[in-house]
Image 1 (tube, helix red, strand yellow):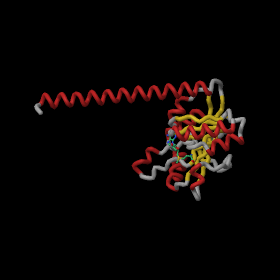
Image 2: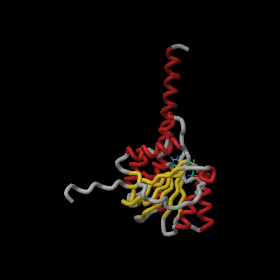
Image 3: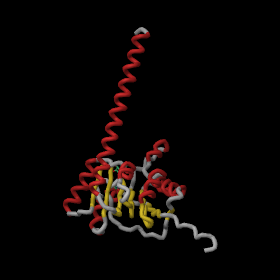
Image 4: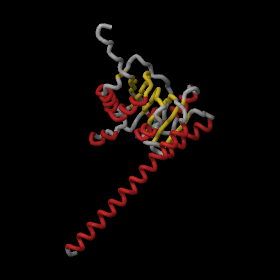
Length: 220
Ligand SMILES: C[S@@+](CC[C@H](N)C(=O)[O-])C[C@H]1O[C@@H](n2cnc3c(N)ncnc32)[C@H](O)[C@@H]1O
């Protein structure tokens, strides 16, 4: 191929990349707008929710919602089939204030109307991403902690549980590194029910983080 031929094929490869980037961006915009619409329809009024991030098939949150029927409970998960299983559980038990939404956790927090507050958030057995080069994918990290803190009630409890030792240490470190949350050993785990993954595990560790206590002003 002569120089002109090479330049033409490089040019068409670039055009294809730009096209597929545009298609991807348009798709992302559509997903974001759909999620904003779903959230606006579900939460037209100010409300405090109990959120489960990565709710899987909804075992835990359905059991929680049965015992806390006055609370609005929301489970989010990336996988459509799992969300559908959660919805089936909700329908079967006629739990009107329980909702399962297919969404990425951070995208969901961004799409929530400003008048929605988070009173309690569970993250149970999140994907551990054991290889160091994949740790950046762990859901419990500074961005999530910041976004949750921006939407929480003052007494919000962030309840984390994992069977993975390395991830538990990571969780403790992430909370310790944040000025927005503090590990709170005085709060008891608020509700026990097995999640799908908990059923498969022999052991796990839990921690609850809350808003750090503010220092008493000097001389008070
Ligand atoms: C190991 S499973 C645990 C499921 C459930 N919590 C349990 O204990 O059975 C992790 C779940 O988190 C979901 N997930 C992973 N990353 C997520 C994200 N960024 N946003 C929402 N869900 C996510 C996965 O699809 C999966 O269902």
